Length: 199
Image (cartoon, rainbow, N blue to C red; front, side, top):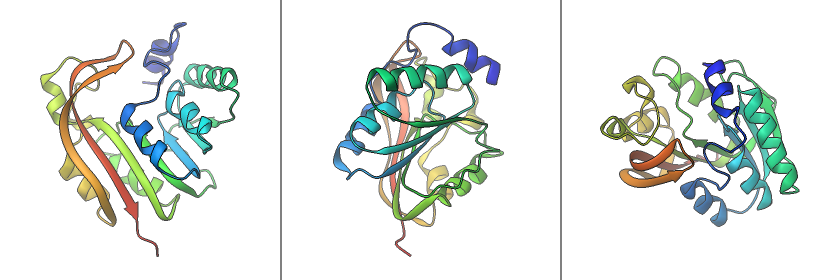
C-alpha cells in the first residue's frame, strides 16, 4: 500500500490539489487557532492551510513522496509544519492537541476503531475532531475513494467509534467533489465535528 501511494504522488502536480478540503477549511476558519494533528495528510493541502491560519500543525502519512511535496508547499507558503513519515498503526508521538483532522483518512474495519481510540488519547479535553470521509454510498459513484466497503464509513460507525464525545455535527450527504484528478464528481460522504468532554 505504501508503494501505491508513493507512486500516486510521484508526479509533479498535486493529485488532490493545493487548496484545502472545503469542509475542513470552513471548520478551521471558525475555530480559534491551536494545535492540530492531521492523519493521512498526503501532499499537505490541509496542513499548509491550517498553518497559514495560525495553527501549530502536526501531520503523519506513510508516503515519503507526499511529505516531500507537503514540505515544498509549506516552504512556498512560508509556513512551518511538523510532518512525520510513519504508519499510523505504529505512530505514537508525545503530543497533545486541540484538534484532530481526519480528511479522507480511511482505515480498514479491522483496525479503524483502535486507531480512532489511539488518536483520541492525543486530544486535549474540550478538543475537537473534524472528519470528512467517503460513506458506503460512495460505492454508487466513480469519483474516487476506496472500493471496499470495509474501508468506507457511515454515521453509525462514527457514532460508535466516537461514542464518548459530543457530536456537534454528524451527517451523510452527496456532494460535488472537486479535489484534483482523483476526487472529482458526485460523491457519497460523511461529515463529523465532535468535541471531547472537558474532563
